[in-house]
Length: 465
Image (cartoon, rainbow, N blue to C red; front, side, top):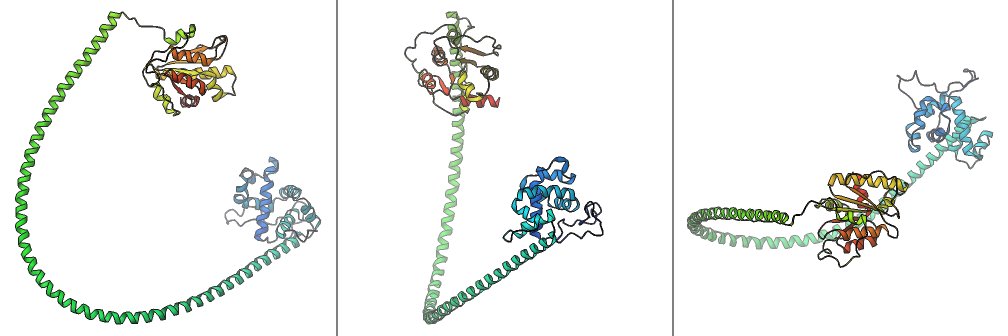
């Protein structure tokens, strides 16, 4: 078949003519394009599609520029018609493709160009290279390839026919053996059926006698059934009377239940009034206690005192603090803890930044973390403290967002020590959440009643914001 696939009549005037003369040739002396076997045509298209992306952009024809951008597995499959048409019509493009294909083919390409293709070479590959390079006698090479392909196809057909004939012979022999076995089975089955027929005839005689006896018993049963129906009618009348009495008792019970519900509702209203009065009394007592102690609102928090001076050495763990800590790696746990009233979020700064965005400089890490914590403080209204290692406070830091406290450890102290002091400074009962993937820090703050969470939980929370 020709290399280019046929087109409909509407586009035939715009497509290049198959077998057009090349530059410098006389159209009267140019032979028509040979009919290519399908495997050869597919191999030519595959070779051209493989080298197409390697050609310079100005050497690729306009219709093929979009095809050159296809993925390798789609280029030969979807662009085959356009590639075939360009190879047939554009001799200069074919020569550029041939140069790259022959370079990739190596010794086989050189042999094809010289017209001495090895006898052991694949005839399809030789024919494809001959079509592109077009050495002396290239049409004969293509014809020989077509004959080889057809011979292989004929051999495959003959082999398939032989295989099918052998399979049919095998199946026929098998069917004959099965038929012999089935015939033996049928003879045995016939003898058994004859024996069963004799037994059935005897059983039929016995069943006839049984039928006559059954009909006699049926007549007696019919008489008994009429008697029982009369008894059942009387029992149904008694049941209807009992049902009417039960319905009357049910109506009385429902009325009693309605009265009981009304009494319970009234009692519940009394209990609600007592509870409201008790809560009101407790609230007024709290207001009076605050007035009596003369407690003023405070502007500083426990963490502010830790930031200014060293706290006392830790003593005994406050009563009940151990029951506050809960070990969990659930990222949603952070949102639950931040929703608690007056929660305090303490963050191990570099432990989080080096895990989340360690490719940045330390200054960029601090800035990104502090900015993200400012968003959390604005959303939740909680107290947020971030702690960094550093003997001296780093100058030039941007102002911390509202609600975020930035602390640096003092000389001779690590950020882990400062975090533990912050936790110990908080009153028992206040929810304190510590973000650090350091196991030692998590174990230390857990003993003082804080909630330790891994750095990944905060990083995911910041990513969500």
